[in-house]
Length: 393
Image (cartoon, rainbow, N blue to C red; front, side, top):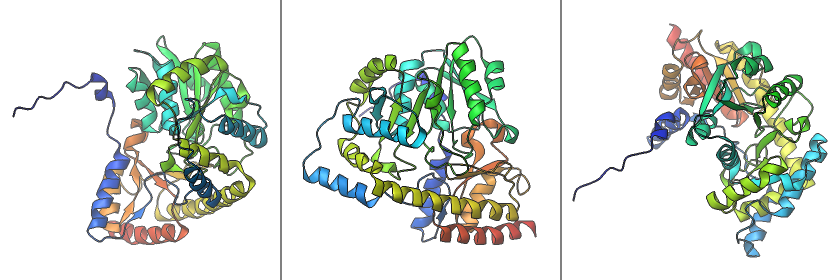
């Protein structure tokens, strides 16, 4: 029987493999061989949903509330998120502007489907989360990666946006706090960026998926900068619900009908079970749990940063959010990819090289996730101390 290989779409040429997942596969193979591996690679909280959220999911299943919802989501959940913005950030957002999505990835997919067309250019910082540029590529646009170093907290500035805006530029895609750096954009700088983009009649998308995990500043959302700012968020990180695939998108009222049309066709709706569970996230009992876990993440950050620096890593910018450290490893190796593979094979510790996040930091930076227990972090530092001492002898 002859096989026929269907010709693939050319857009796939613009989507690179995800090295984070490749390292995860290597680590899984070592675990199958009986090795104990400490995972500081994938950005997934070691906590799960709060007990009251799990109970709400079980009750929804028992009650048979598993049918399709509206493509925009449960009205009660949209209202609860609007109330959360009012209570947490002091921002009034109409529930009608909130669209419930299949995770932040679903939100970004819908936003790019609505705003990116063939040949369109979207400005992003280098380094940044790789999937964001691939969402743009999926709709035949291109991400223009702008190198941003420690002096800019690895984020875009208004001047960078102004200088790099070209004829094909249609908007910017920001992340604050950022993956991989854990750094946020200063409030005044973000305001200036929005003003520059607004002046050019472009769009501003701000990924705030880690926004609940900011440690050193008062809560601030880009939604306070105007109704034209598009914000992405999710239940995955702060609410510890990664596998539930539940997120949301806040858009101007004029964008709701076209995005609803896209959601109807692409997704029908987000998981109804996850939506009913998500409602319980905003109850006081659950918020108490999540705030305690946030404090634990901060405790881990305050341990891991100086511990890494003692080993010879350089942390040029203290991460103020998320659960990542972006560390310069050039004093230890001139090849971050080689170093992370050696750390995995010899020390049993998973870190991620800068390859995924953009060319400007690809070979001298590694991303460390501290979304694991303090005991694991301490054991990882002990192993790395032995591993690195062996490399210098």
